[in-house]
Image 1 (cartoon, helix red, strand yellow):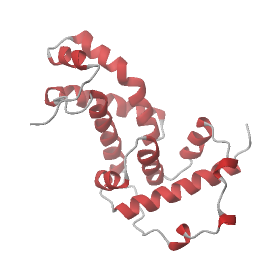
Image 2 (image 1 turned 90 degrees about the horizontal axis):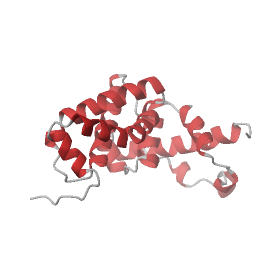
Image 3 (image 1 turned 45 degrees about the horizontal axis):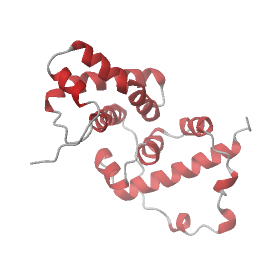
Image 4 (image 1 turned 90 degrees about the vertical axis):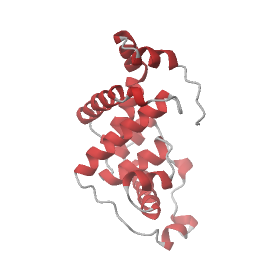
Length: 186
C-alpha cells in the first residue's frame, strides 16, 4: 500500500473525478501558467508549447481516474507535460550526443573558466541564451536545471546514458555562458 500525499487541490481533483465541469476549469486555471512555462522551456516555441499544454491537459483529464494522490496533482501533471514534450521532440529524431565527458572539461585551468559571478544573469538573458541552444542540449539543460530532474531520471526519460545527459548538460551550460557573454548588455 502506498502512502498518500496531502494535496491542496485534492477536493478539486475529487470534484473533477465526480464530473464537475467547473472543477475541471478550476484545476486548469490553477496549473495552466506553470505547465505552459514548462512546455515553453521544453519546446522553445510558443505555438508548440500551447499545443503541448492543450494535449497534456487532455491526457491528464482522460487519465484522472488513475490519479491516486501518491504524489501531488501538480507533480503528476508536470510529468505528463514533460513526457508529452519529450515524445513530440523524439518524433523529430533529436540527436543526443553519446559521448563521455572529456577530461579537459573537468581539468580546465582556472584562468580558462568563466567567472560565473561576472555574468549578470537575468531570467530574460538566460531564456534568450537557452533559445539559441540546439534542441537536445536545451531539453537536457531545462530538465536538469529548471525542472529538477537528476541525470539518472533524464537518462531514463530520454533513453540515453547518464554520461550523455551529463555531457550534454555541461556543454549546454558552457554554451549558455558563452552566449550570454556575447550578448550586448541591456
